[in-house]
Image (cartoon, rainbow, N blue to C red; front, side, top):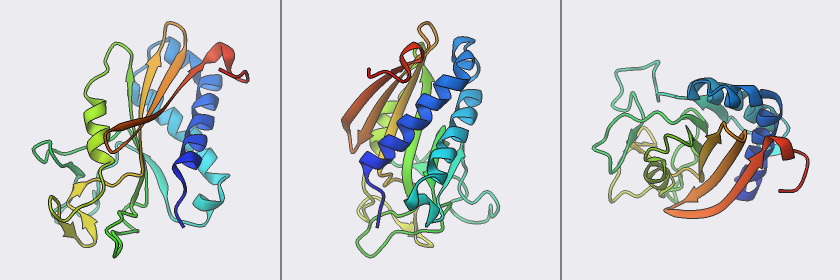
Length: 196
């Protein structure tokens, strides 16, 4: 049984609230995005540990993960994106099985659950395109399997565009699934614990 997108949103939003509650100075000081993602991943892992689904499966939260870095002789030594000239891809944060769970008989990619792209408000980048591509379902018409994993990374259950706003110490979270914005949430440091 898979975790629902709603449960993923709850886990991520609780982690984001805790991150902003305890690490708000990092956002205020405009620390490097890698620093912010490293700290945020700590809070995501805490929420995963408290969730029944994650306690009974082998999923992990990693930052800037490169697929099969221990075995560079494989064709898929780095995650690559489809529709982006097959360039290497390193998401800011992902929740995945590190290749343990493969594509099933119904072509569901069981390896990838959540992908997060994080940026400051002054540098939005092309995250929407990336998240739309990464949440597309696996298809044999434009992808192939190598040892049960897609050559081009795809099939994340949910994508998250996370934007840091240092001026008012807030986060804007936008969830993406197959080219569609499915939900947006704003978390402000001075309102944590209150309904926003």
